[in-house]
Image 1 (cartoon, rainbow, N blue to C red):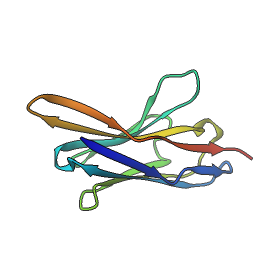
Image 2: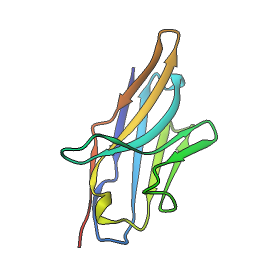
Image 3: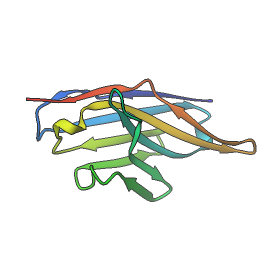
Image 4: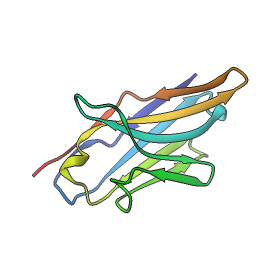
Length: 118
């Protein structure tokens, strides 16, 4: 089992920045991938960014503006969001994937609201 706790959401004006943090606890040694997803009402949850080993993946809509980083020593993942746009408004969820003999499991944080508005 992995528990995820997010922090750092809030309201910011267009062009501003926010930094989201996610701390993992529990069976963290089984985590092989961490990332961030977001969801707006009426739409499916979508990938924002993930990191695995030394590689990262970003949604096209955030490339060049968002940066994901992982601190293995602290079992945390950070999402630095710059040049925010109104369309970035969503609930952001931290994700951790674990792998064991029984399969791959996804764990989710409780979500943190990000609002970009004038």
